[in-house]
Amino acid sequence: MAEVEHGSHGGGPRPNISPPKKYDGASRQLADQFISQVEAAAEFERFRDERQKILWVQSYLSGSALTWSHVITTGAEDLALNL
Image 1 (cartoon, rainbow, N blue to C red):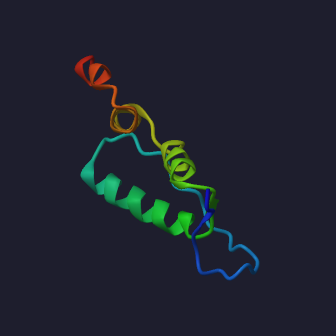
Image 2 (tube, rainbow, N blue to C red):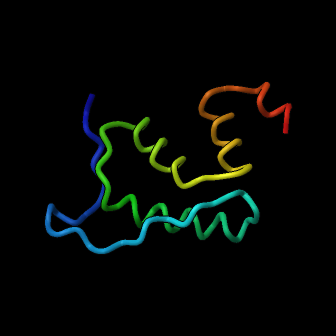
């Protein structure tokens, strides 16, 4: 598998970027902030593949956002019925 590289830091020292704050699905405004934080932090991460990138983002989800994400990525429709 090809390594997926992100960022334009050119291999130099990694800037001190805060990790994204956990997102629980509570509001649209917080979702927009979460997406911005994830995009900024991902610029300085290296992912082997798309699966690793998805797992990295999921590690910053909780509550209904994490449940929704698992439903989408695993196809577990029966889990969604229990919400």
